[in-house]
Length: 417
Ligand code: HAM
Image (tube, rainbow, N blue to C red; front, side):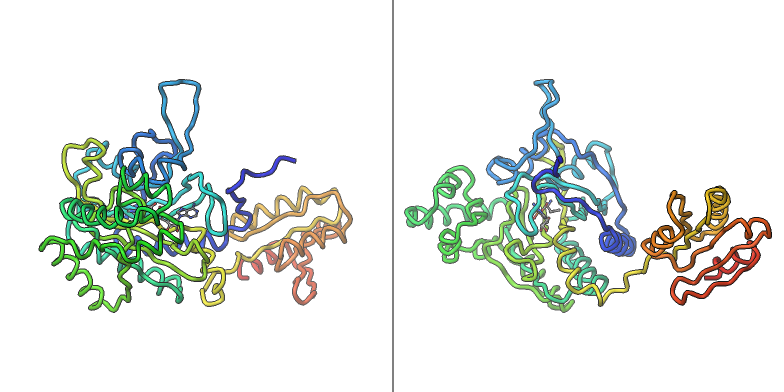
C-alpha cells in the first residue's frame, strides 16, 4: 500500500478548517482585505533574492521542481510574501495600500514534528504600500481581534521587536560582531558560518547553548536612530492605548532577510516547541530586492493554519461551530423503487434540502444502518404500496415514529424541518 509523503497530512474532516476560514474571510471583509491567489510554482530566484541565501528556507528547505528542462529553476512556494509582491509589481497595480489576503499550501523541507509539516497551510495578509507605524499597529489589531474575539483563543502571547532601518542594522551588526568574536568558542559551527555570511541569522539558531549565549548579546532596539526610536516608542504607546498586551522579545529577528523595523509573533504554549502560530512584520526593501524600480514599504503576516487549529481544537466547545445541515435519507424497499428514490431525492434538493438516496443492493436492515451512519434526521421509505398510492412513509430517526403521508406532504414536512 502506498503511504502519504512524510510531513504531509490527509484532511478527512474539514469542518473546523472551514469554520476557521469562514471566520477569517468575514474578518477580512470587515477590514477591506480582498482575497488573491498566486501560483504554487514560482521561480527559485524569487525566494533567493527576497528571503536571503543564508536563511534556513533557501539554504536547505526548498522543494525544487525538475521538469527535465535544465534552464528552468522552479520551486514549490515556501511562503506568500514574495509572491504577492511579485504579483503587485508585475500587474502594475497602483492602489496603495493594497490590502490582500491569500489562503493556501506552502512547502518547506523541514524535519517533521508536532505542528511542523513539509506541506502546511497559511492565511497570509499583506498591506503593500503603507509606510506608517500606525498601519503596523492596525495589522496587529486585526490579528488580535481575530484571535481573541472571533476565534476566542485565550492562551497566547504577542512578541514584538523592532529591527530599525538598514543603517541601524549596519551599526548593530558591528556591535554584534564584537560580541560574537569574544564568544567564538561558545557558538555552534552553523552560527560561525552565519557570522561571516549574514550575521543577524545567528539569532535563528535552535541550539540551546547558542540561544543561551545570545541572551547577553547586544540588542538591536538599543541601536536605533532617532526616527526609528520614535517609531518604536509610538508603536508601544499605541499598543498600550489599544490594550493589546505584548512582550518585547529583543532577539526576535524572524528568520527571513526581508524584514525591517517591526517584527512580531503570536505564540501559544498549547503548541509545544513549535509555539508560533502567526508571524509577520514590515518589509520596506522587498520590491527593490526583486528588481522593481521603486521602494514599496509594506507590512504583513502569515497565520499557520495547522497550528491555529491545534489551539482551537482544544477549546472548540466555546465556539458556535454550525452543525452539519440536516440530512434526509431516501430508502427504497426493493430494487424497483430505486429509481423513485433517486427522483424523490432530486425533488428535495431542488427545495434546498440535503437528501441522500440509499442506492445499494443490500437488505432493508443494512440500508437502515446506512441511513443511521449518514446521520439522517428522517428517512423517507418507498415500497411498492407507497408507489401505488403516491405515498411515502416518513420515519423520524430519533424517536422511531413512522407516518404514511402523500409524497407532496412528505416533501413539505422535510422543507419545514
Ligand atoms: P513564517 O514565520 O515563516 O512567516 O510563517 C508564518 C507561520 O506559518 C508560522 O508562525 C507558523 O505558524 C506557520 N508555519 C511555518 N512553517 C511551518 C511548518 N513547517 N509547518 C506548519 N506551520 C508552519 C512567513 O511565512 C512570512 N511570509 C509571514 C509574513 C507575511 N511576513 C510578512 N508578511
